[in-house]
Structure formats: structure tokens, C-alpha cells
Length: 113
Image (cartoon, rainbow, N blue to C red; front, side):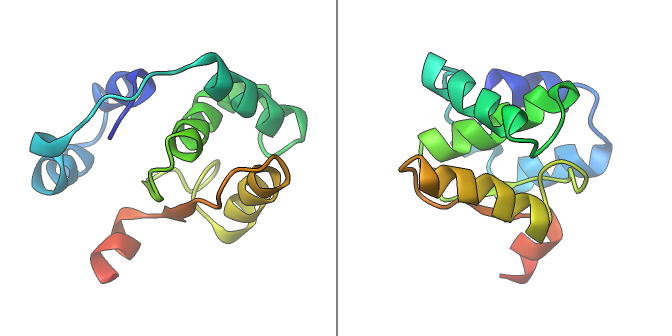
């Protein structure tokens, strides 16, 4: 599953990222819409200080995965998405607002699962 934000970011992604996508889900992708609910949740992440407004697209990634209940978000973005502190911050907000927790992993962690 992916969104418009992912599409845009993949245009300039390293070859390693593009190779990973081709191997694991390129032929199984489903495009998810960025709805007003997604944008509201992403705004809450920023407003509550998970990341700064400059990282709104990262919040949209997390919000899309949360709203559509994808179960797992895989990202190379260790600064704004992947990491126990960030995952906890996103999930604390998700649970408080009535959403499910989201599993956030790096591609390497997925390969080890």
C-alpha cells in the first residue's frame, strides 16, 4: 500500500530502496487516498511535537498507515518515523484518539521478522 507522498518520494529514492520495493510489493500495491481525516491526524502529530511542521509528509505517511490500519509501516526515515521514541510518540497519540497502534519498522527489521 502506498500514497501520493510515497510516490513522490520514491522518484528520488536510492536504488536500494527501489529494489526493496520491487522485490516485496511492487506488483501488489494499492494506492491509499490522503483524506481530510489523514491530514487532521498528521496535524495532531505536528501540533503535539512528535516532529516539526517541516516533516508534515512524514506525519502523513504515519497517518495514512494508521487510518487505513495497514498494520505495519516500513521506512528508512530513522529521524522522523522509525525508532522506538518516535513510534511511541505516534502510537500514544493514536491510542488516545481511538486508533490502533501501528508497528513501525525499518526494512532491515522486516527482513529479520
